Image (cartoon, rainbow, N blue to C red; front, side, top):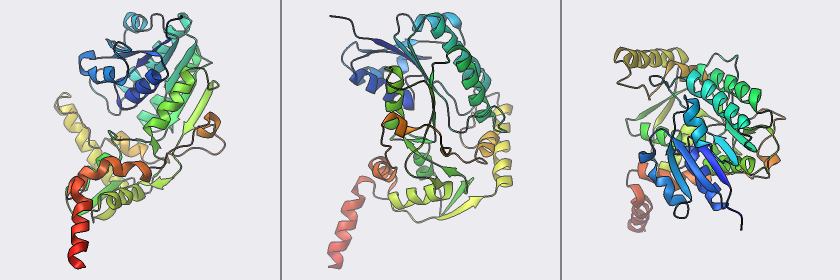
Length: 330
C-alpha cells in the first residue's frame, strides 16, 4: 500500500490556509503547514486524523527554511499574504520575494503541482502598493512555474473573515456607519469555495493558468454594509466616507505606526487600502473562474447569518426575543 501524498501549505494557519488544510486532509493527503509560529497553529491538527496535519516552523524569507519544509512534497500551495506591512514583512518581501522563492525552490525540487494564491486586481502597474505587489508576485511565480495554478479571489468571507465581521463590528460604535470606498464594487467569495479551488490545483485536477474567483453577487461597499445591517438587525445611517477624508485618516493612522516604530500596527485603515478601494474588485469578463473548475460559488446571504449573529443586540437570542414580542402583540 502506497503512502499518502504530501502537500506543503505555506501560510497554512491563516484564514484561508486552515480551510485548505482541512479539505486536503479530507482528500486523504498528509498536510505540512509551514508557518512562522507553529506553537500558535495547533488548531490545524484537529482538522485531520492524528498525525495527518503537522505545523512546522518556516521563514519564507530564507531559502533553507523554505526548502526544508518542502521535503518530499507532492504539491505546494502558497497562500502567504499580508494586508499591512509589519517590520520586515513588507509587501515586497512577502508578496514578491517570498512568492518567487517558494516557486523557484518547488521547481528545483521537481514538485509536481504548484498553487499560488494572489488577489483579484493584481496588477504591477496599480497605484495600490498591495495590488502592485500581488501582480509582481505572480510574475515571479510564472518565471519559475509556468505550470502554476494562480488563484485571484475577491474579498473572502467566512466565520473568521476581516470583511463582514469588521463592518458588523463598526456598526456597534454609533448611529452612523461610515464606509470608505462606498461605491467600490466587490464580489465576496466564500472561503470554502476558494479552498476547494486550491485543492483542485494541488491534486492536478485544475489546468494551469490564472483563475479569477468571485461569488455570485456583485455589490458595492455601501450595499455590503446594508446587507450586514439587515443580517444583524441594526438600524444605522450608512454614509460614504469621501476619498479625501479616508485618505487623510489612513495617512494619520500610518503615521502613528511609523512614529511608534511599528509598536502600534495600523489595522484600521491605511492610505494604501484607500487607494485599493479606488478600483473595482470584481471578476473580469471572459476570465477563467469557478465555472471552469466545476464549482458553484456560495452566496454571502446564505452564510453570514450563521456567524454574524453575535453582533445582534440580543446575540443568539435575537429570534427568541422577536418571537416573544410577537406573542405579546397577539
